[in-house]
Length: 246
Image 1: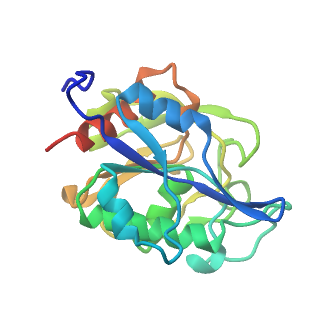
Image 2: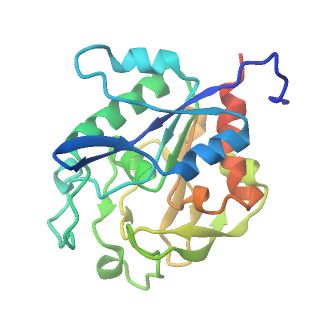
C-alpha cells in the first residue's frame, strides 16, 4: 500500500502519553522518538489528552485511526494483585493514566482499530486480559538476562519470534536484536493472548490476540530506540497501513 500520495489522508495515530506531576502541575508527554517513527511510517502522530468531563474516550477513539500505547513507569501492584517491592525512589504509573489507557485500549479494540503496545504498553495489555507481572525481573526470574532498567541504560539483546505469528509476518525475521530498558515483564500470560517472541531467559517479549480476535501487537522492547533498523520501523508501518484500510 502506498501512503505518500498527497490526495490520500494520512492516518491519525493517537499516542496514549505518560502522565507526570512536575512544578505543581500534571503533564502529558511522550518521547519525541515515538512521533518520529509514526511520521516515518506514513502516519500523523497526535498526543491524546484526557476528557476530564468535557468529552469521552469514545470521542477520542472516533477521532483517531490507530492507537500507540507507549512505555512508562511501573503499573501499581494493586492493579494486578502483585506484591510490594522497592521502587528505588520512582512513583508507579499515575492512576489517571492507568484508567485512561485501559479505556482507550478497550475502545479501540472494540472498534477494531489497530493498536501497537510498547514496553509498559505490553505489560498493561497483559494485565487488562487478566495476566500478572514480574515486579522485578532480576530478583524473580531465574537465569535472567540484563533487560536494562526504566530510565536506565539501554541494553541490546536478541529475541526469537514465532514465524507463524502476525509479528513474524510483520518483521520477516525469527531472530534479531532489540533495545530494552525495563525491569518488569509478563509473569502469567493474560487470557486470549498468544506469546510470539521470547528472550533467551524465557521472558515473553511480544503478544498478540489468539486467533486474530482483535487488531493489536505488543512488544516488551523499545522499537523507537532503533529507528535506523527497518525491522523496528516495520511495527509502526504495520500500524499505519492497517489504519489506512477502509
